Image 1 (cartoon, rainbow over the protein chains, first blue to last red):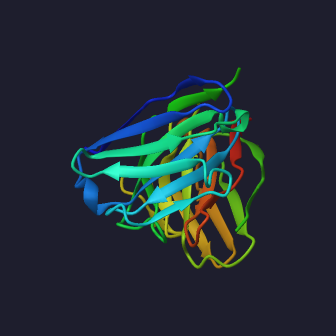
Image 2 (cartoon, rainbow over the protein chains, first blue to last red; image 1 turned 90 degrees about the horizontal axis):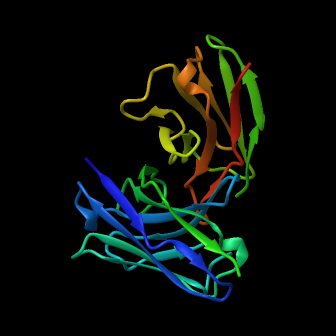
Length: 122
Length: 106
């Protein structure tokens, strides 16, 4: 059974940094692209970033480009999201998601982790 | 690519047939997925490739469409179907989601 377990969320001041982690199990991690999707309280879903199975190709939403960095350690079956210069509008539940192929492009997202909450507030 | 879902909310009764639409601002071929989200839970994949039912999803759910216009249909609503539904395009970056359709009990 595929499991995705996010961690690293918490309360941070504006301008601060956090690193989210997603521990994956139940599948051959280095074959699949992975993504982060966030959901602000009471709102819809926003794609944040995607990384290919090898880690060589990365994409970012304009809203986080230059502030967030996606990475993965295939030896540890772990996905990361390094978040810097955090803003109030980054407050959200961050989901780790498996793509259905090595590149998420023209694939689909399944399954989703349960999410880790990031709150940016002074 | 913007995805516009309609309606934004919908009240229906158990046994009703319900259709939710998703319109893309430009063509996305069939690279559209539908997810169901219940309160406090992660989204769950229902349909991918516009019309392919994910394994384990009841057959009362179906999807159709290609290009810019897509639909999700629930043929006979069950109590567990009351949730929020999102469409999602993976045809090109940046990936985008519809704003969601909240399906409520009448």
